[in-house]
Length: 405
Ligand code: CTP
Figure: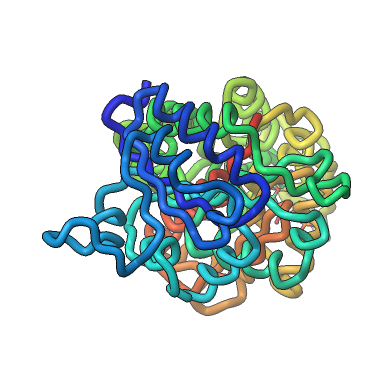
């Protein structure tokens, strides 16, 4: 299944090096062409001969030991690889990589490659939880490296905890998944439901309660999702925007109608993005005839509409829920509250009083918050561009850590 796939394994020094030998064996059995680089510390545990025998390739250990005078080995290997795996990855190599240090064959190659790099840490649990290591891992996540989280169990040092190199079989399965699926677009084959625009809550046949939402941000989100390959459904309140091509649009008017439409699309949705500005209240009674003016003031009694997003949060299986929060003050704090109270995975908060944000504008200024603690402000940009950046950031967050689901 891995025929013609070129995998470069960087082995650094920890007791789990013996598992890396098994990993090379299994990758080679699956058809991959595997090349191995070892650090000096790795060679304290296992000699290069084991890796050479398993990979049927020369093993690289020294930046200056150029085996082929026609090429520079670390650049050649860096360019050759389809995928680079660092396993086991010590706290030391993680620290070096996070800081751009290149002082041996492994780290020079890692800095030189443009291939995807997966890092499989293995170390003592206290080292793994050490603040510097946590910081370095977070930095590498931000830089686009992907991690194969260590598993929990008995560690060679005698501790029980998180720090065991993931089992070679599981790493091979992840590699196979990676090459099998390799979707050209991050949302290919996934259903994304987007709600947009205001809702209108009728008072009588000629009047309604609504808000200033124009649907621009929601339409931009739907178009961005479709461009990223999603099977997109746009549930739209009344807006004056043209229907985007290639997107199924469901028109609704009231919060109750929007709720029904979203519910019927929810079960097989991968992600629901609730950009709509749903009315929180509606007239308690809809007058069947036009209300005639009376002398003096008039009172319209309002009742709460259903909180669609909160209800979706309660019904949630494995859908990703993305909310919006329009605020006029304390935007991030209120956003955090809504993220939690509505059981969301992400919330996009904006202060609608910002001159470059808000209803009807073509630009927006937002902060993306996640359940896992992401707090990323974005500078002002056109809503269409922002929508793509937000979706790509979310997809990146979702794929950053490879979980064995
Ligand atoms: N939302 C919803 N149903 C409602 C009200 C809001 O699904 N009846 C969703 C919106 O689509 C948005 C998120 O909840 O994604 C937050 O909406 P917002 O108007 O900012 O907040 P509210 O929950 O209405 O809270 P408040 O009005 O108190 O700020």
